[in-house]
Length: 167
Image 1 (cartoon, helix red, strand yellow):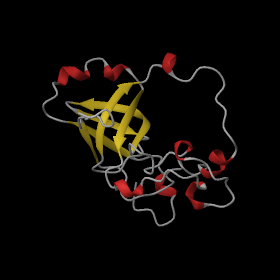
Image 2: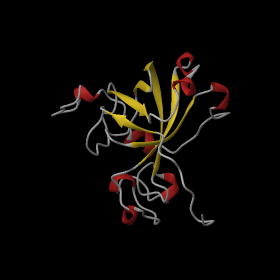
Image 3: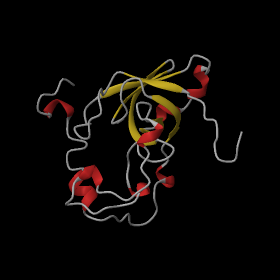
């Protein structure tokens, strides 16, 4: 292993839920995080007592050539300021990993039924952990106005999206 790269196991896959590369209307969609069969069911012991999971997933449909290290306007919208790669939450970052805070609905064997997971069907999961509120950001979280404007429909119900085929 080189100092520049690490090997990360795929622990599971997203089953169902979102399809396609949509920027908005991610709410109200249920999916399953299906852990690989080599993990014992007891690895999930106690997880059902938590409301949320932090899930790290791989932008598996991205290509290495998608990485963009230059400043650019989010969603190529010139009304929003050009910002650097690490100000964006997309597949253009070097590791091409995405974090989500999914709401846990129930567990059935090695299947974790969740909502508010913004990864598509078939997405590899590289890690998950229960959310401890004590480990959420401390203090006031600040940001410029453009993320609020850009994400106003991000968690809007998918069934309300014009032409939506998701329920």
